[in-house]
Length: 170
Image (cartoon, rainbow, N blue to C red; front, side, top):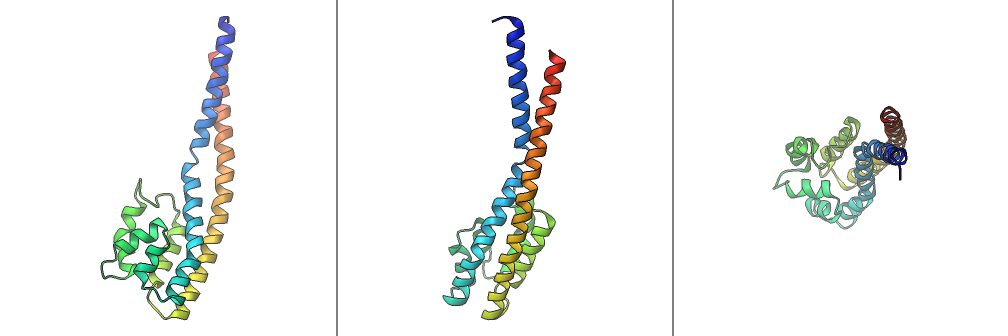
């Protein structure tokens, strides 16, 4: 192989690496989709446990096997879900936290959820959980769209940056 061929191969590899680096910038967006999706999926389970099986709130939250709900349930210690959420919220949302990927509107829905959990009768709980399922579904759809758009954008920007660097180096 001559030097020109090696430079061309290196330029191609650099371009691909830059494109992949751009794609990697969307990890937070993908995590948001996943968190919202699991929250949407567990709302009916929580409703069944709480309103039909009359499982205590803490046990019902643990039975969902959703990491956020399990974490809050484990920190309830005789308090309500709202109090446990308020105490744990900052740690969960901080950098590297379980829900550091969520946007303010997502957190507002979680505030509504934890404010209402265990605070009223069966019919109100059922209504709350139905509303939350619909809310998380809408947020998940928006998050998927945003993740797809940003994934394409960052991949293309990485590709273009890689091409520009490769051209400069050749």
